[in-house]
Length: 310
Image 1 (cartoon, rainbow, N blue to C red):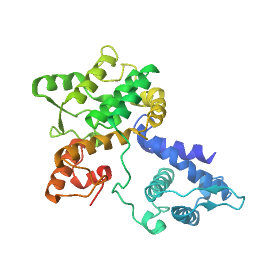
Image 2 (image 1 turned 135 degrees about the vertical axis):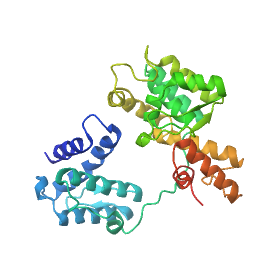
Image 3 (image 1 turned 30 degrees about the vertical axis):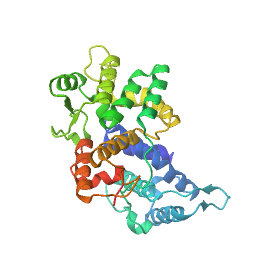
Image 4 (image 1 turned 45 degrees about the vertical axis):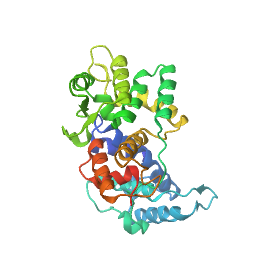
């Protein structure tokens, strides 16, 4: 089966025990290309050529502006520019995984006729109250560690993997000693930087103490000795994601965006660009730099994908 072959190629490229989040995202998105191949009577990966890849790009381009109607009447709904870019990135990655060359590489900008914008334009749906409600629902469902991840991501701006792997004992010692704690474990790309130190206020302390209370016995983080990040995703966080969406926030990343907006608004003492006009460009720049630092990014421009642009 073509979809199975795609998934096996991705596992071979990234490693079956590594980069779970990346592999999972690609495996979800490659389903659309597998269905596209099936509708074009392609059953063997060896039959995929540049013409088919180009046709897929044109298909996605149509869906940017209108539904795509197949000859049998089935309709595929419009998609966003960002999602279309992600779909093409997944096809490029999968084809490279299968062929070990770039012969079938598709330029997203050429295929779609529009560059991806990293500037957020939609309102953030990650109120602290909603995050706490989701955590309460998870506690009631006996998913205590999932609730801890929700609270840590919203209170400290952690990525999910950071929340899972963070040394909670170390954080507690730092908070007790200095009133702040650094985010060090599980960082993207292995990036460890002591400048990513965050002041612990009431909500941060509440989240940290809850995580300490529900972590497995003998562990410094939310994983038990028999857990892996992958198994924790599969057994706990996938179910927690459904509860989170029902309570308002559409994803764990949205909780980071809520944290970012709180940081920005506390510095400028006014609304983020998503909720009102920028009143002081110099202060806006300072706030963006602080948002980027607290989220673990090197460039202040990245803040635009969380709190909006100019």
